[in-house]
Structures are given as C-alpha cells and as structure tokens.
Length: 564
Image (tube, rainbow, N blue to C red; front, side, top):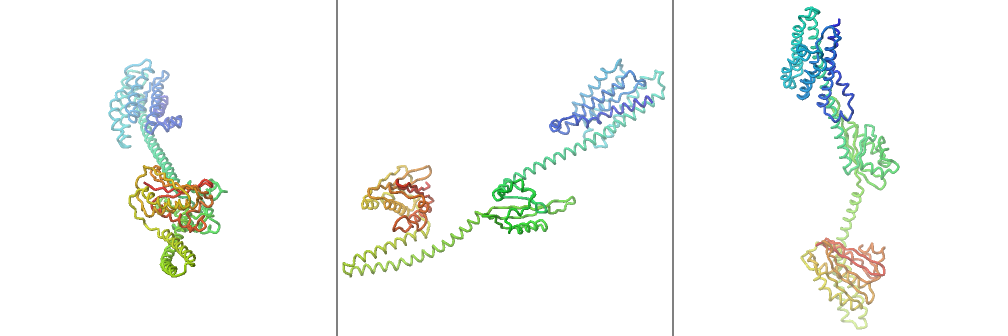
C-alpha cells in the first residue's frame, strides 16, 4: 500500500506540470496576456510549471522518510518541456533537473543520479524534439509513450541493479513496484500529452476567435468611418422600421430639421419622423416594400422649406445554411433643395432666353421702319418752313433716343461670343480720350489719366471694351456737377489687371447700389437702365468682373478686373 501511495503521488506530481498551466494563466494580468502571443505564453507558463513539477517529484522521491525507495518521475515534465518548448528552454530545464538532484539528494551516489535524472535518455529526447514538432498528433503520442517507456526501462534496470543486494526488498516487490512506476509514468505522460494538445487546440481557437473579433471590430469601425465620411444622410432601420444607426450627416440634418430631437433620441424611433405628417405614410410604405419584398425605391419628400431625395434599399443577412434574408433597410437621404432651386432657375432662364430672342427679333424689325420714318422726317424738314424746325428737331431726337435704346437692348440680348485679339488697354483709352475730353469740356469738367506702365497686353475685343469705357465714363460725367473730376486709372493686382473709373459725384445710396446691374434699373431721369447691364455682359464675356464702390458725398468708383 505504501508503494502504491508513492507511485500515485509521483504520477500526480509529474502530471501537475500541465494541470497547473491554466492556474498560471489566471495569475497573469490582462496586460501581460495581451502583450505575449499564444506561443510565448505556452512556453513561459509550461516552463514555470515544469520546474515546479520536477522539483516536487525529486523532493518526495529523495525524502529520507520514504520506506520504499521510489523512483522520481521528474523526467516526464523535463521530456515534455524539451519536446514542446524551444531548445533554450529545454536546455535550461535539463540543467536545472541535474542541479536540483545535487541540491536535494543527500547523500547521493552514481546509481541514484542515473536513476532519478534519466540522463542516459537525454540525447534521444533531444534528437526526437525537432521531428516531434512537425509530427501528427498520433505520432507525437507514440513518441512520448516510447520515450517514457525507454526512460522507465532504464530506470527499472538501474533500480534492480542498485537494490539487488538489499535483503529488505524481495525480488517480486522490486518487479511489481517497477511495473507500477512504468504504468504510472506512461499514464502521466500520455495524459499530459493529451492535455497539452487539447490546450493548444483551445488556445488556438481562442486566438483565432480573438483575431476574428479584432478584425470584426476593425472592419466595423472602418465601415462607420466610411459612412460618416460620405456626404449623404444615412440611417439603417430594423424589420419594424425603427432606427438602429445614423451617420454624422444624418445627425446634423436631424439637428437642423428636428431641433426638439437630439441625436441620441433618434435610435429606436420610426424613420417616418424625418418627413412631414402627410408624407409619413409614403415613407413607411417605402420601408415596408424594402423589408417585405426586397425592393429598392426612390422617394422625393419635403420637410419645411427643404426637399430631400430618399432612396430605400434592403439590407440582407445570411443564415447558417447560406440563404439570405432581409434584416432591415437602409435610408440614403440627399438634400436636393439647392438642386431644385437651380432647376427652377434654369427653367426661368430658358423662358427668359426665349423671350429675349423674340424681343431681339422684334426690336430689330422695329428699327428698320424707324429709319424710314427718320429719313422722311428729314426730307419733310427741308421742305417745311423754318418755324417748324423746332418740332422736327424734337421728333428726330426722340427717334435717335429710341434707336439708342434698341441698340443697347440688342447688345444685351444677343450675348454673342466676342472675337478677341491681343490688345493694349491703354491704346483703347487713348483712342477714346479726345471724345471724352470733348464731352467733359462741354460740361465744365476735367479728366485725369493714371495709367500704370507695367500693364501687359490682354485678349480683348477692342470695340466692346471701348463701349464699356465710354459708358462708364459718361455715367460718371452725368453724375457730376461742373468742375467735377473723372479719373481713369489702370493698375496690376497679382494676376489681374484693373480699370478703375472714379467720379466726384454725390455717390449712390446702398439700396440703389445693389440693383445697379439689373436691366431697366436706372438712377437717371431719362436713363434706359441697360447701360450697366450691357457693360456687365461684355465684361463677363471677357472672363472678368465689374464691381462698384460708392460713398455718399465722396463719389463712385467702378472697377473692371481682367485676368492676365
């Protein structure tokens, strides 16, 4: 019974190397578990538990209180460590095994050293280690059983030789105890190997599950980032039409359109709250069609002054047998308010363009009979008494004024493509100078030219630019009283060339300044309101801009900027 007790104790101590591994994991902190990978954790934990196991085996085997002189099974954890761990750990454990014997055994002898350490089998274990790692599970089991059997055969032989002369133990007792130790060692080694393989399997599954979970979290976060970066309002709903996710644009839109609802309160609500009450039924029907029938559909909805284009698409989930079912729907909502306004403006532009073309044709036809009327009036004036010249002059002036209005209207309505050539802006101004000086002298005004010598040549239509300069200059002179000064200035500003026309008139009120370039708006008693509109049209055809700066009591400045 004492021998059986010693055998069972040695078996338990030898097998504790693998049994203690899970307890060792529990002792690690979460940071340590995360920091080490699966292989490092197995090597590290198995090393510590193997050292503890072989130390306990040697302590109990070499205890002075034992009466049966048992054999130490510390060779089992050493063998498993050499086979499963890396060579450095195997070498360290082998040396520790020998060192522990010399530290614990007292007195020690050569037979006891060979018996308890199994050093004879070290070379075979080391030679089997490399092949063991690449073998199958069944092959590994055979290797472990074979090595332990060989170790126990050598230990049993040494035991018989060592104690054959001792009359305290019968030969039958020695043989039975040897067979008992061999059976116990095989059981301990086999079960330990199975336990290690099972732990490796579960640890591998755990690591794989952790990697899958990490990949899932990464892909989910990536998907959220993509959905938040998309410039569209996106929401997903479950099979009951309740919101389960909204992206950042949807939160922003909801905050603007639903000021009483926070972004957190959106989750769990029905998607029909995004539209007005009379359109809620259409939204619910659209979601129902996507969930019940898997149909994608588009719906235009309104909320207040905004117009939204809502596209509803089904979301599919896959079952375990590989079939797919609808698990919800996605709402992709785009704010098309500006697009609708632009479409409406384009419709208006098309209608105005048609009206402009008709008006241009009509005015062109009207100008021809007016020319005939003017010719006959001049002929009648020559044959009429001089007392009627005053009346003829008034009629001719009004005809000329009407013709001027028609010319300005035609220039504005035609919006033709200007043929440009490389020209010097200063040359155009110098050609107009005599005409401008003549007009200024009649009004008692003066003109100043401030021309920058560094102004480069530009691609201009000289005839149209003359029309702009002449119109702006005459507008300025008409706005000034006697002794007024009109300044024409050119300068370069970065990649632009600016023409500034400044007058010393009374200035323009801010209310009127906003409407200056509108057709038929004028600040003059007899103005047509087409001059500045025509100037703006010409400047825009030259890819330029025209702006006005005015301060009441200090004059007005028109700035025309051309790209170089």
